[in-house]
Structures are given as C-alpha cells and as structure tokens.
Image 1 (spheres, rainbow, N blue to C red):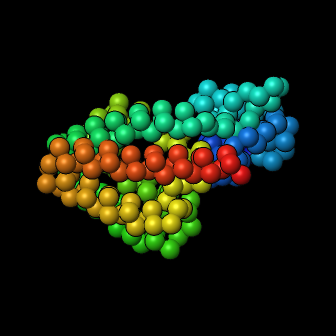
Image 2: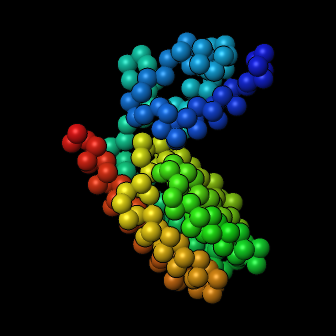
Length: 217
C-alpha cells in the first residue's frame, strides 16, 4: 500500500537502511514506530513492515520491547570479516578469469573516483570504496557471489565509522586496490585472490581495533 506522500514499505526500508549505514542511527539507538512515522511522515503500518525487514536482515535487533540498531561484538566482527575475506578472494579470482574489457574499464573508473575522493568526508570515501568492490564482484559474473558479498557489506557498513576514516588507511586502500586491479587486468587469478584476501584481512584487523577502542570508552 502506498502512503499519500508516495512512500511504500520498500522505499521506507531503503531510507532507514541508508540512515543506519550513514550513521544517522548509531548502534544501540532505539527506533520507535511512532517516532519514525512522524519523522518520515507516514502511517505506522509501513514503518512496522520496514522495521521487521531490517530486523530480519540483522540490521536491527530486539532489546526488551524495542528494536535497536544492532550492536556488534568482536566475535561477530571476526565472523563477518572471515567470511568476507574468503568470498572477496573468490570474487577477485573469478574476475581475473572472466572479466571483459568493459569490466576492466569500469574498475579503472572506480579506482579513479577513489583517487579523486582523497579529500572527501569519511562516509563519501566509504561509498566510492564500496563502488570499487561492487565493480569487482560484478566482474566475476557470478550472481551468487555478488548477492552474498552485498549482504555481508550491509553488516560491515552499519558500524558507526568506516575503516577508511583511520589515519593512513585511505592511502593503503588505494594502493591495495591498484594491485588487485593490475592482477585482474593481467588475468592473474592467484595474485588477484591473494591480494584481495590480504586487503580484507588488513581491514579486519583495523576494524577489530576500532571496536575494541569504542568498547573501552
């Protein structure tokens, strides 16, 4: 059912999901149906459906009588990144084997956009960083991989601060992406797989330090 302002449960879901990923709702923040309905100027029915979908996706969790933005433990960080490391490596290897000239050009453009975003805000950097990974996944021409990695990305991006916000990480990520792209360009599956896994392993270690620091505060 469409609301008078054109909103649907699906569009509201996307708006709320983006708000969580952008840090507008921090981990532990309570999402109350009535407050969300007032903020987005919709009735409570689409809000209820959108919140249920966000809970199903693991973005929200039940705490008592309320739904809150999921607070991630160190164990969950390890699980998410360990899966991501394996799948990113598989995607990079497939991309090296199956990429087309058009895939290569799109990857080159994505890396160029990253270089142009060096002075951007952290969440803008996170967006163009994700765009590079997305292009690499799609260059694998494996729809199952793309779907699985996109789902893992949702869990990673709901943390309040992207890893590229940390000093020196942006420059490291640029160099690592350039190496992965070069291996894909040369159709070197082994090197593409290894570099992609090392890239995500570095992000995992940084994320673990960030979570530990936030828990100490």
